[in-house]
Length: 129
Image (cartoon, rainbow, N blue to C red; front, side, top):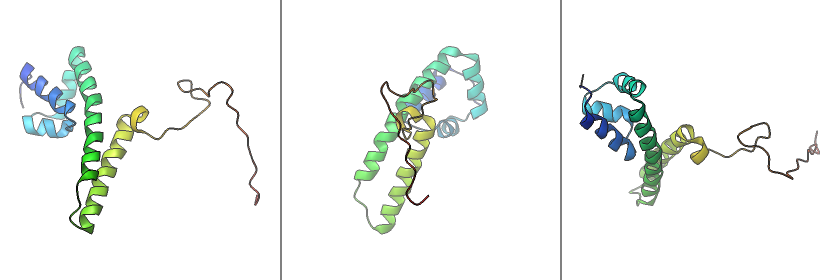
């Protein structure tokens, strides 16, 4: 297992800034994810750097989706492959950063997202009910 060094911590932060998955970065640097998570628990400054890097990395992943979409497909199979690659990234972004990349839902009982002043809900019974 790799020893914790400033260079290794910087490499992890830089990779996350670029939108690379932590699993890949750990594999590339010969370190286990559990060791890295222990570092986060032990070092609040590193945990903050990682959190900021991940947030930036989300935007990099979203940009990557645009690049994938803009590539000219070679054939119908390539179109399907691109769709899967984009959908996978978008679904992960929605889970990792729901406020930025998730579907917006207006829920009145959510204290972090109260209904706007003057908002009115009209309940209508369906005609076939």
